Image (cartoon, rainbow, N blue to C red; front, side, top):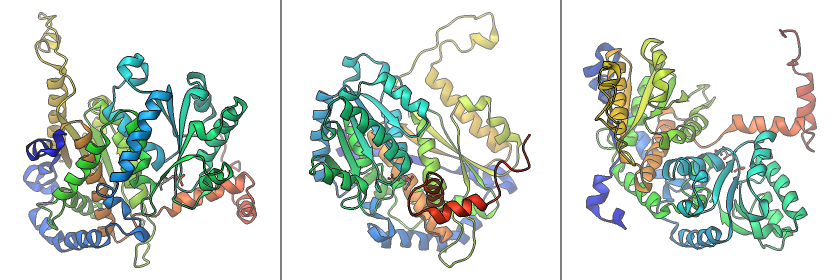
Length: 478
Ligand code: PA5
């Protein structure tokens, strides 16, 4: 495999350029070298915390070892994916949150943008869908385009208690059973090793379901590099060993406690400094349609990890910055006006691509119309890259902090690097903030309130409390 040669790996290195965060570019609005020096000690502590706790299941840090401890699982996944590609016309992920955003993002990044519309020979694998909601219209739309008997459903849920995923499961299970299909023939579970409701369901079927483990120390939003993401990716024919090799490579680039030498630590530190300045919005703006969904995936990673009420010392901190997804160049014609002239409350991250999947020459024409004629003879790649650079420059000139993550090209190896860097960055940022990066008490509260509203046993107290709370249909209706 090409990613195994050192030269190739180094040529595919994902890098970060944060010049436009600094006072040398932004004047008094930029970060100074003194500020970087001042945070050095804290950054070193954050690095040490993550390093010391790597792989610890009890702290939900098992994800750090995923690039190294899955050889057997990967081989099993590749064998299963081969069978699925032969046997099924459709592959559907049933899940939500961390179980759905990763598979969607990798699909979007590494497969044809109109994959499902390609003729079967060009597609090479089953049509692919991810049900990331319980909108009845969406479920019906799915049922209108698949044949359930010819579909492999991958139910992904660590707890097996997530109402959305289990609703999807119940609907599909009913359809399959009514069609005379034995569920284990058309369903694969990705779940906890021994706890959770999918395990109970499997027991009822005599242990016949094919199961993959969502490891103990891996939370949903950090799970893309375990079977949660690897099975769907392998079914799509994506190089999953390349994804893991990319993650391991990035890990090796982040093995120093120095802002100057560790890109993930540098980004976490920059964000920490800007958080202290009250910059509470973080925009992620990839200049590639293939990377559009990395922004969705990252928004969950950053928001659910850092949005916390209290720190480890018990102080109320209400930490976190609001991640915003954006797409270059599309959003230059909507949001960028705000970024350039609105409040100084944002940090903008661009993801730039050096070599796109194709060039697309722009034909000559309309030479007598200067606004149009100058485009001919260039390529779309040149245009998108010029617009990317121009936007970063314009923001810098307007005193707006921005930095760029550079991807030599989009492939499994570089995507693995990008994911792992963003995961490490999030872990370092959480350590800098002294919060629990890996829990989600707010989400759990919402889940419990839903249980109460739908009359789940054991939630009667919560239902009563909700009934007595100020009603949404009170006074202020227009
Ligand atoms: O990041 C997380 O932990 C969440 O988004 C979960 O992935 C999501 O709530 C689904 O949970 P489960 O895997 O238990 O169905």
